[in-house]
Amino acid sequence: MVVRPEIEREFETQDLLLNVGPQHPSTHGVFRMVMEIDGELVKDVVPYIGYLHRGAEKLCETMDYRQGIGFMDRTEYLAAFNAELSYVMAVEELAGLEVPDRAQWLRMILCEMNRIASHLMFMGAFGIDVGVFGTPFIYAWREREAIFDLFEEVSGDRMMYAYFRPGGLAWEVPVNFTERVREVLKAVNQGIKDFDGLLTENEVFIARTRGVGAISAADAIDFGMSGPSLRASGVPLDIRRTEPYLKYAEVDFDVVVGQNGDVYDRYLCRLQELRESVRIVEQCLEKLPDGPIMPEKMPRMLRTPPGEVYIRTEAPRGEYGIYLVSEGGNRPYRLKVRSACLSNLQALKHMSVGQYVADAIIVLGSIDIVLSEVDR
Amino acid sequence: MTSDGNGAAEAPAEAPESFEGTIWPDVDRALSGISARPERGAIDVIVHIPREELIRGLRVLRQDEALDFDYLRCLTAVDNEDEGMDVVYHLYSIGKNHNLTVKATLPSDDLTLDTATVVWRAANWLERETAEMFGIRFNNHPDPRTLLMPEDMDDTFPLRKTHPLAEIEVLQGEGMGYTEEDL
Image 1 (cartoon, rainbow over the protein chains, first blue to last red):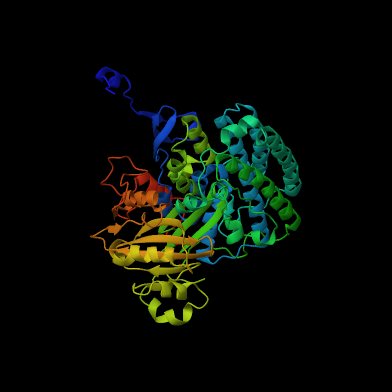
Image 2: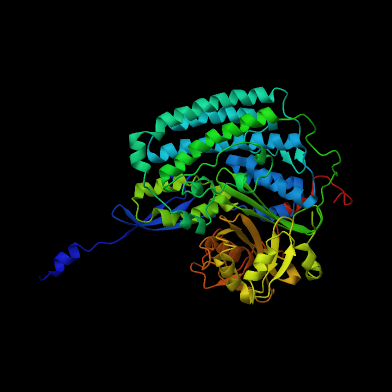
């Protein structure tokens, strides 16, 4: 068959480069990606990050250990307690501080409550990503608000708490703390039920999310993914279980894993984790002992001997690691924040290529990125 | 607590008795033929590998069945000024649940190293970040662009110790009303 040149030209197609971000509302922060699309199919994704880079690591080198706590809050603002925890644990490990039991239990309660708040934020934002406008977001905000009120009563701040200290806590919690936590948990339980009813078996939601953006366990491990995004692929890596810190060895909880590693599983993992977090907090409240919240003798200015340590904890988005090198003195020689989202985001291209454009947005949402943690 | 910071010189001397119950015997067996030197860290064992043998060593650590380091937790560098730069790898095995820290020291006048992306894809962005922050060149890196810095910022390395901070940042760190004795 002879193809005439004018017809050939007519059918000549070209891939389109589509820029998403940096200020697109569905990118959960300041994130830009350039997608190469062929019709509705994504052929390539090039992510650009760094818009929120503030040099927290370098700044911490000039600040003493207590001042650095505030910077850690700002790296991971949706789960600031978890971020602080890694940092103070690293300092404690180097300085050889014993943390009193009560402080450890209280830290655990606050970290799990923060995980709940963070996962709720994911539920709400993810709902908007898949197109359920409004309702899940408002539901999430309602419960998250209750948790933030509680955090404000405890630490004085709604987001950047700066409440953990190397050695323990800044001050004692309010007298009615346990009752208040129980109150909030009741509301959270209701919120989880609402989400379950709203999304889990919603036919439209399942049609949008099941089988989308799947990643195999081997690939997810190779890309260094962690947290619920990794567990959704069926890898039971939860640092609370594999290398227990605080008092996680003394409470009973399940590590939630998915099967297919798709967007739906990543959602479901987070939903189940909400329930597990509630379980952990309830056990903590029962076991919460009385006692001091700081070691008896604390130096006015904390110094550490030379040494290095890599502390990893399970933050809501995955492994939040602190690599702290000390040369002696009262400030870090080098501080490296291992960001869970940075490693998770690396797999974005792998997960989005071959999907529809609209699905690429859901895939991005399902990793639950916090760009200030990615860029630090 | 162990204090190991300046222990580079005396570490080999105490090595034989101090690695009981750690992962080092296995690592030593796997790394036969590679001149690795162990050091006891606060939590994990640290292994120093010369940079010429580093990638070979990392590949062995990943492929060895008893070690099975399939997960790269973290990759970064530490600027030790006159003593060169350390590139630090934090490895983890999901199946075996053990950790290892690997270090390679680069001389200050030749900051090049082979890429570890051939061992773990996770190393890709971490190496890009390390490269732009410290000026270390990773040979054969598949995507050697900047990650967090602007694309044209290839002559400034913010995390080096020689890179100055603005005056205000120095003042913030040194303020807080502490006297010299306190610091």
